[in-house]
Image (cartoon, rainbow, N blue to C red):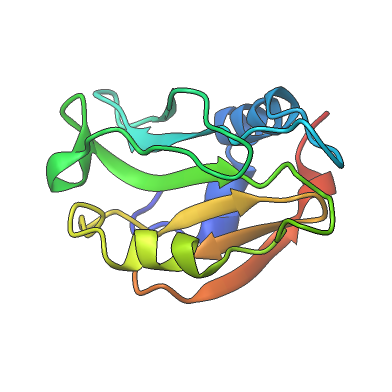
Length: 145
């Protein structure tokens, strides 16, 4: 993969697609009872993309583990992701202001390879850019499973 990477190209990587699909299923999407799942997409020692999952979140909150210098475990972070599994009327599917500020204002998410945070929702996969802008990237149905 050539860097800098385009968001849709990153989503086409088999391990990334499978992990995002797995995170969506594990987040128990539906009208009630879901919880957020997330992780770091990193460039490993062999210059391959791999995923480091975060601890399980709550219904509409997930805590991002420490990632000083836009790295985790000594590996550069290429992207982050989390799910928005709650489809009820009280929940946003698209990234909210807290999501946007969380990416935009995190000084440790400003590495040279970092492209932003994917938010996996019921119908769409969004990307929050490092500057806090939101883009629709792909239909969630395009993820496997």
